[in-house]
Length: 149
Image (cartoon, rainbow, N blue to C red):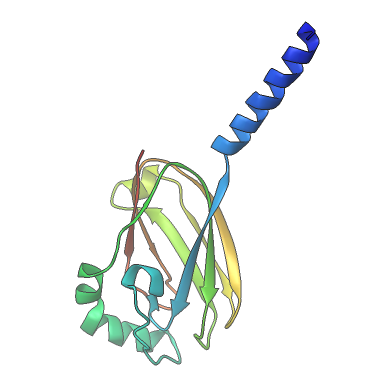
């Protein structure tokens, strides 16, 4: 083998390793009335026609629901959060941000425009820390996401 051939093979391998380490993983989240299903592990079948309905539901149920919800654990890196509006009859959104002082120092992503039956992607490079995610338009609890190696 020639030195040039070996150099090309090394460059190709390094490129593949770099691409694998910077892969963009997709995290799928499903919204129904007043909640994300994945952290709660169940669709509570809340009936909602507008955001005010969720505010009333959350006043009564969010503490218990959050206490029983699963924390999402991810490693640092690039992620796309694919958020689906499963059956909510109004436009939804998504907001991922650092918790507490992390809100000032950690990356965040947000947006709206998710119509009934549609999904929208939100891409972000997550660094180590504690995050919250929710939907302000379909008021949901603030679910926890931990990013650590």
